[in-house]
Every structure is written in structure tokens, then in C-alpha cells.
Image (cartoon, rainbow, N blue to C red; front, side, top):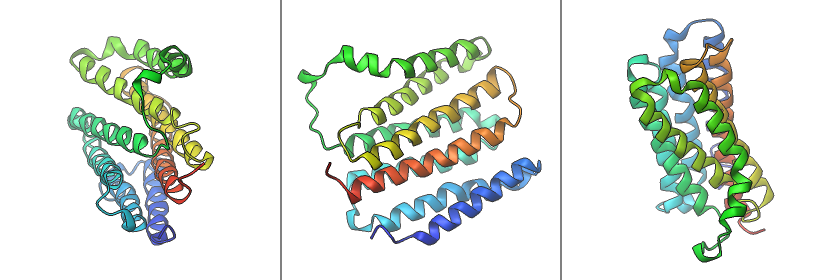
Length: 230
């Protein structure tokens, strides 16, 4: 089943390159057609390649994450709808957190959690998030609370991806972790570009890292389903 849907991946590649070309050529007015198709094609691939787990919580959570991503992509095309786009991606990360937890060969036991060790492992992520907040906080104004909440769930998504280490196969861990990290980087650049200082070719960097992030996350989940055991 995992070889199914290859046409969707070709479509994903085509519309992703088309969208990037529109950005480079300053023809953003046409992105209302190209941008939504990026995640729509990835969703099509995921649904077709996971038909055998239809009805599972994992399939529902990942599908919901991609659906909210698609909604967020459309909303962020309109500057006045930024807060709604932020809310859509907030839900994306919530759904991915659930999916990341479901793709672990591990039974969670809060009594055996070493919180100090966990904090030290995640410290680089906390420092990066704090640094981004430090740079943008003076320009947030009424968006400060929504942005802080979003940053917290983004950090949680990335740390949940890191905590899969040793709890799934190596291919699944690295694909998904790199995807989550690139998602973090993409959102970080978006925040800096919007609230700190415009970044040269910022939209290309933001979309490039975002597109690769989404693809790697889906491939990481796929790898876990193919090789579920270590």
C-alpha cells in the first residue's frame, strides 16, 4: 500500500516548484491557485497510501493536521487574516503532537520520566524559541498572547518529535525530527520577517523550509508504518 499514491507526490513536487517560481517572479496574485495545492496533494498521497489503517486515530490526526495546514496556507495569503491563519497552524501542531505520540513503540509512564534529563535534551529548542521571542516581542502588541501560545505549542511539537528517539526506527525518527525542526525554522523566519526585520528572499526561505518540513513529517510517519519495530 505504501507505493500507492506516487502520482500525488509528483503533483506535490510540481505545485511546490510552481509556487516557488511565482514567489521568485513576484507573481503572488496567482498563488491562490498554487499554494493550496501543495498540501492538498500531500494529503491525497497520505490518504491513498494509508488506506489499510482507515479509521485509525493516527490517520485521522495526520489528516486533520494537513487539513488545518491547507486552511492556514490559504488564510496567510491575506494579511488581514493572519490571526486566523495562526489559529489554523496552532491546530496543525496539536494534531501532529498526537500523531507523534502515536508513532512511538513506547508505553508512557509518568512515574519513570526523568524531567531534568528531558529538560536538558530540549534546552537548545527552548533557547531558540526564547531568542525568537526576545527579538519580536516589542512589535507584537495585541498579538503577543496568541503568538506566545503558538510558540509554546510549536516547541512542544518539536520536543515531541525529539522524544521519539529510540522509540521508532532510525529512518522514521530522523525524517520526522528533521521535518519538525524545519517547521520550527520556517515559523521562526516568518515571525522574524513579519515582526522584527524583513528578510531578503524571506518568502522563498519560509516556503522552502515549510514544504520540505511537511514532506519529511509525512515520510517519517510512513516509515514508522512500514518498519514499526526497532
